[in-house]
Image 1 (spheres, rainbow, N blue to C red):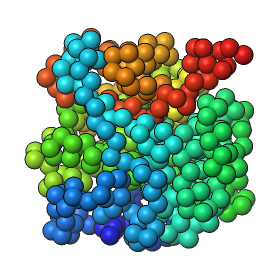
Image 2 (spheres, rainbow, N blue to C red; image 1 turned 45 degrees about the vertical axis):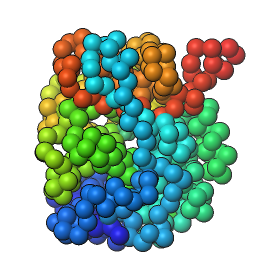
Image 3 (cartoon, rainbow, N blue to C red; image 1 turned 180 degrees about the vertical axis):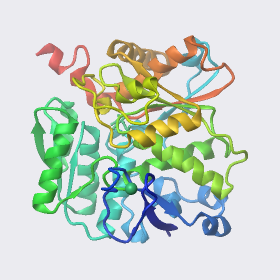
Image 4 (tube, rainbow, N blue to C red; image 1 turned 180 degrees about the horizontal axis):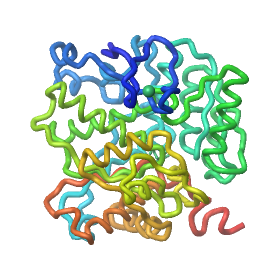
Length: 396
Ligand SMILES: *Cc1c(COP(=O)(O)O)cnc(C)c1O
Ligand SMILES: [Zn+2]
């Protein structure tokens, strides 16, 4: 059962009815966030009861938006491993580094979490067709969960997205349109097609529930660390869904009284040097990010030049005492090798970017040896073979 109360705009505070299909606050051009009846949940459900349920994202259904269990859509998302990486830590002069390995999710990335929640709730509210603009993995994940739900899906993707993303989305039966340009260009086309055909647009933060699915990563971390939170989270931020979601989760965990002590992690947003709108805004001390012209990086999921949730991302970084860090594609590829050779983890370039950032942060003394640091590997490296040296594109 869901304890969802309503949606609200974090900028103007207006409340939106959660029993209808909603998008975002058009007055503020802001994402909507969900509010749950946490006092009642606190009184009725214990954290131990949640821990005792069968594994997977939906065991947290009380803090997810789907009303009826029959509408839960699952392909086995969630409960990904939290792997200690001692050899990598030692190489960086650190002690307690962990990788939350999201590559175990269906479709090989954490986009599965968000799409499971968004597609399930959309279907529960009567949506009959879905569309998404994507840098790559969101298209595959939408296509898979739409297939699972028996709904048609339409995907707008840059023509130079990883080939695996195009192929998987088509295999799952989605209609894929390749766009010459960036995810921002795909976004405009998707919005137009949505208006024209009555499809529901599940663009990052333009519907309210992908962030709810991703939020569960924060709950899983709390549980894995014995209902405490690590000191630092290093996260590859494109649209920022996971960062914003986990920051919400930490507030909910505090309100639920499920934490042993209310100490939140410092959040680090890692971006590619070739597309770093959040890092630029952070360094300028700005509340909003400017569109990043000429965005380029092999970390496709980080090629998001104009994140819609810029204010929420920057606020979470600031409120947490964290920061934003840019890493070059060369550093990303070196980090990908380090993680593979030292720990046996074949990370997506986006995930490898967090390891590159760890190197910078450790060298600067910003990370202290005893701190528990969690780096997110958000997807599997196997989907990017065509972009790597020796991959299909390189040998053509
Ligand atoms: C989409 C994506 C990201 C960025 O995720 P956000 O939560 O939207 O910032 C990072 N890594 C991978 C592999 C992705 O597919
Ligand atoms: Zn508003």
